[in-house]
Image 1 (cartoon, rainbow, N blue to C red):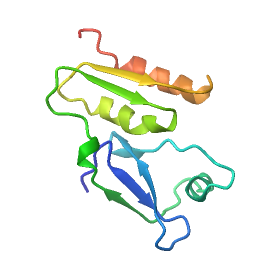
Image 2 (image 1 turned 60 degrees about the horizontal axis):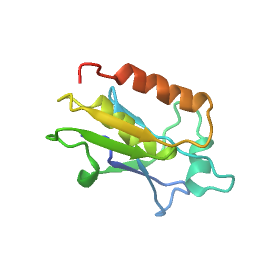
Image 3 (image 1 turned 120 degrees about the vertical axis):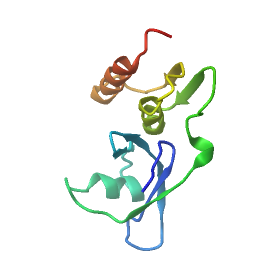
Length: 128
């Protein structure tokens, strides 16, 4: 299945017809999500209780209006905390080395934000 960062992952928390959609990032053949846990969250609660290697029913929906551009002089990406996953994937998929600026806002400075900073440091192209 061809998947791109910015596509949507539909999950079924109650194993019925009700879907929850998450914008995904892709890196090294893996799908990445960043999901904020809400105490009574239908989708986030379901994802949070998953065990390692547990299989879940889901489908990917193409979202071509939210993909990294193939031709642009430069790109600015603006994300809030949980909206960062597709942008991290887009940066790693930037095969044409288009200059990118990522602006992200986070409420807290914690281990997760430290991981985002580490990722962006690894992706920096100082030649641009």
